[in-house]
Image (cartoon, rainbow, N blue to C red):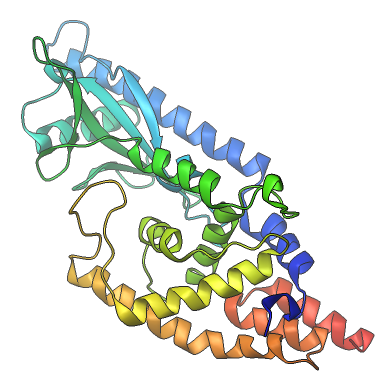
Length: 331
């Protein structure tokens, strides 16, 4: 059956996306304020901590920053419990940080604590970043980088993880932006959907993965990498694109549970047993949910049944309300 004969719920999906998935300007501005406040606390804390340790003028501050993760890629979704993750790379000169990666992360954590003592939870130097939690549930992850410059050689950046490792903090964002531009349907190809459909589909797949509190499914980076592999664009409807992408994702995972980094050659995103278990659960949830969408292709499908089908995917009040209203209208 031609997918364009699938029951048309495009307008409902777009409303759901605009009102209940994407952040919107006020929330984006609030998260940006958290980011800036956190960076200012770090600047102040490096000065105070250095002076306390008899380092004239305080410890040197970072030279620049780079947004990372969902925050940078504009795929950060609304969260029921305000658990927003803001990823920021803070980049120092090599000589301005301790030589050991752990010591570098610890200095950043200690500087934040020196700047403000009434954090809900003390800033913690975790393996890949220093995390600052806020009372509403948001948190900022500060990934610590150093810029390595050798005489006669181009400089490069190293990330303070378990050990120093060469890494570009903006590589994932650059990759995602390129995918969003190149994969999404364009008006030049006859598309009538809004631009950057790929980004919307990634966010909607993430909304599905976070639709049940009890689910423990892969994070945004893995989901973005998977959708980039299987994304099925549609020139005229987002619901058709999402439907086809979800089925393609299920088929892909049935064949292969491994996910490689899209930016680091040879790096697996699923090498840890915990992550592999999340991938297995994702396949199980797709097998559970997708049969409920079969009704969308039935020739006698009614609007109420179509909206109820999407409620199985997202488990959101919006779809329950739309389905109820359609039933009351006799649709």
